[in-house]
Image: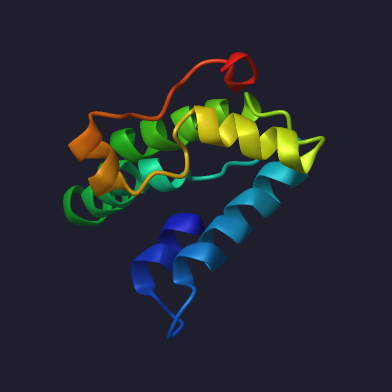
Length: 114
């Protein structure tokens, strides 16, 4: 569902957000960890979607979403300020181009330890 909405772009705006809402609804229904796509990881996500569109191969998209799901699960979402701090120390809010210039990547692993 997520890929189809992203692929066909049925709305004037908000296709990506709508696609990720549907994806997360399915994950919640299956009692799985929801997925966020950190800003710094956006190019990886968009590239994987484009690869699926052009090459009809899901492996890269699955790998990108698997990583994002593990990353999302490493954040303690129980308190907003704490979650914000964890996202910040793992570079989640960096613009992808700015992060590349600075040599930064999304810090994987347990975000709670920084």
